[in-house]
Length: 385
Ligand SMILES: Cc1cc2nc3c(=O)[nH]c(=O)nc-3n(C[C@H](O)[C@H](O)[C@H](O)COP(=O)(O)OP(=O)(O)OC[C@H]3O[C@@H](n4cnc5c(N)ncnc54)[C@H](O)[C@@H]3O)c2cc1C
Ligand code: HEM
Image 1 (cartoon, protein in one colour):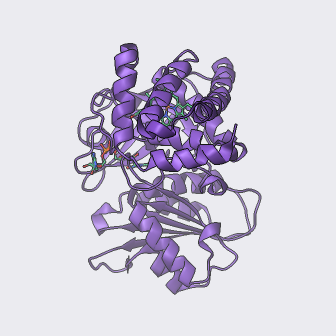
Image 2: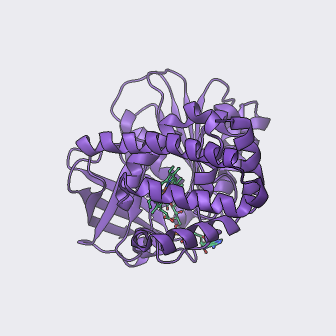
Image 3: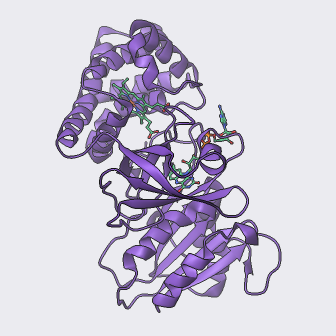
């Protein structure tokens, strides 16, 4: 396989943007209509992650070593869509047909064989990981809603109990599907450390014009059954053991994984200080302060600092969590975790950089949605060209 030739054709094809998924899906659904029900009813080029990711991953196969753990996770995760090993050649054929269409005269037998070999390699990593997971874990977990509490405008705390233990580490996320928005999976971060009763608490903000989050906040009740996928991500998981101080910056429901991390440390004696700056637009969006105060009361190492963007209330800092934090003290040497909207995360990184904290060292997660600009794949840094 000539990886330089493959990359050149990747660059040519990637320039076609939203036309790629449209062609790919038309080809897939015409040749294999049985795959249509695996995908969400409403699909559009802009919102697609799958096809762009597929082309990006396969086209950058020369970095495959760097993305093996990601591909293994992706393969395990694909079981929740009902994907089996037999689907891979089918998708591979539609991928090659799409590339042939857009590369036109550049689609030589050599280029065709490069792409076929690259796809097979990626598919093999994914199918092997899926086969291994088959032995130990279900494809998805059914989770009954056992608590639903509206807190503040457009925010709900949804507690579910899974039918079997769903293994995860604080800071990870799981994908969630509601019966009200069929086949649409969205990531949510458990706000608690794993519990023996198999309950998970989700903090959900209803996004304007969104499909899944308004359903979870406004139309979900106790007794409903959600479907959860396996836990993913290591961007926010804690590196232990460490004595370095922890600075946690949360924006809105970006609090959830950071609270799970605090729960992971709850009750432990430790030398380091943990400072949580929890940001919200207004005071009534500070939806979880009582639980945070309880954690603070139990743990001398924890300080919770609520921050609002606007308004005035005694005891509340005003501004962005990162700006308030760097105004309080120097954080050099601290481990910094940031979670919130894409905008909140990028502002935080800029502010931290001006305070001498290298953005590369900051652990972060952005609550982006499908269709958000940027890389469709959470490829590790070294694999981004
Ligand atoms: C790792 C991770 C963890 C997350 N954890 C949480 C969490 O704990 N809590 C939480 O509240 N959220 C979390 N999120 C965000 C969550 O996954 C969803 O993205 C969010 O809830 C919106 O989903 P939705 O289905 O309601 O909106 P979507 O239907 O995905 O729409 C989102 C927005 O996109 C707009 N939109 C729709 N179609 C298009 C289009 N074609 N082009 C452009 N824009 C369009 C909509 O108007 C809306 O404003 C997390 C995200 C990630 C990536
Ligand atoms: C090399 C092989 C493949 C790669 C690299 C790949 C990659 C991806 C990625 C990155 C996503 C987005 C996941 C997310 O949002 O978390 C995705 C979604 C999806 N993939 Fe794959 N995939 C592959 C093979 C397949 C196959 C064989 C099928 C079977 C038909 C399939 C069906 C799906 C479905 C149904 C979704 C969800 C789409 C949506 O929600 O809009 N994938 N894939």
